[in-house]
Length: 357
Image 1: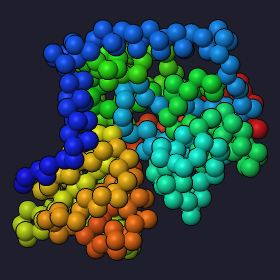
Image 2 (image 1 turned 90 degrees about the vertical axis):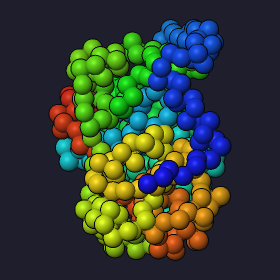
Image 3 (image 1 turned 30 degrees about the vertical axis):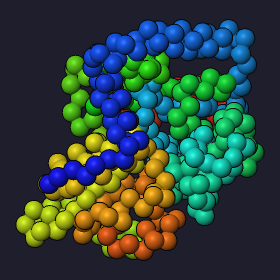
Image 4 (image 1 turned 135 degrees about the horizontal axis):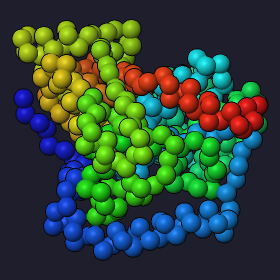
């Protein structure tokens, strides 16, 4: 089935990401600039380590879930999994985030009634999936203090992204990659990396259905990385989440009954979402969109499809737009992260030396 044309911004993003996977002419031309970027980012990190730039320590352990590969690698599903694993271990986690697209810099609590425009799409999804306290704000240390003041029972904080936000001290760092590994291994703008793969971390997780030794070696992990997989089995209608269709039903309908199925993804790596659906046997028309797409341009209006599948991250925004919320073609695909449960146990062990309030 044919693939629909991406938007101009998505096409530019695709061009860059393709060049970041190899050391071709464009990457080589940008390589000198990446050396400057590396020097400046390294100097900034060193200034925080030396105390020249000030950082804050919070009274409870802080776990950073982040990446050095620009764009989406699956941080939000990993954060959701970790919150649920810590809750199962008897802890009371809270989550802080910058809140991409949120409408203010001061700390703001995420509630079930919040909108993506107020707090960002990913924090709202974390709140909906876990029910744990979530706050967003530009200053993560101040946001963490605000969350602890509002929820004194919280005894461990997770920060969704913020690996390079050194103004907040942390006890555990988790770096997440996906099947692209470290790309061409170069820093921005010649490559996709914010920091070198030699950067220290406590845990390395790779979001991929197949973890090869070559992929593991490419990300600079000191030990064999942990593998994370994202799986889905059904879709739920956006306007009535009680209505479900399994992947098996959709696969049969899209291949045998002539059901025209499209898939839209405004995430950092749309190909990962499309690949999951195709691996389940669905024939789809792909509609890749820019990460954090706001859907105000009504991208489905001219889409020739009987049913449109989307990610949960996109669904939290579409549910706020009346025209899209009531479109019976729109269906949401919930996904679940799967990891070795020992990760949560090791995090608790590492934090044991800190005060667990």
